[in-house]
Length: 288
Image (cartoon, rainbow, N blue to C red; front, top):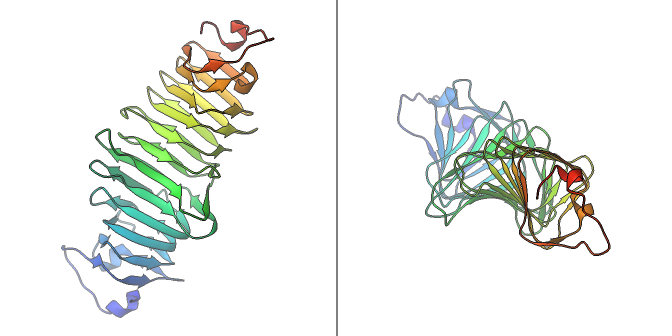
């Protein structure tokens, strides 16, 4: 266990610094530039509190399973390989547009918010999902006994691979985005109070979700929105332009709520319960 001051007069050119123990940073800032650039948090390593930053875009790398406890990241957290678990306690703040990159190929990777009660992912940064292969995907989710709040200002998006944001009580107030070049897109199981987007051929799947009043779902320019599960409900706004909407599960027209569509297609894969009702296709943008 150490604090930055324990390093004393530390002059480094090139090479690597690897944390295997615990960096005690509460109330302090670690500027990676003061210590020669990138650091790596190895499996079993831990950072308690404080802020990590870099004006020169130095990066904190990670590999294996490690812990961030009440940390503010003002520089990027990037992967060395897949099959990693970043355990977050007491929330995580991404400042100065910092990015947490999750990578999956031979094994899944997880950004897991542990502890008890509500854990918060806040700030103005991003979480991205990258990798390749169909068997594994990267995940952002609460651990056992915790719930997750994704604050406004945070963007979680695919960057070439499938990603999942999970938790029945997970609340999104930020932006969740399915981008192109991801075969299965972004999968969300939770409550949307922010923005959901499927853009430029990207795919976004919602499973057993509620989109409450104030939540927005947008599919544009060839995006695909998939509503699946036994129950889903839109109380907010769904807007689609030249995109595809796939409807699974069992639903009635009212479940679509405020549904504004221009072009594109709507496809029924589940069961439309229409007994005693009338579906006017004109109210939903045309052909189904």
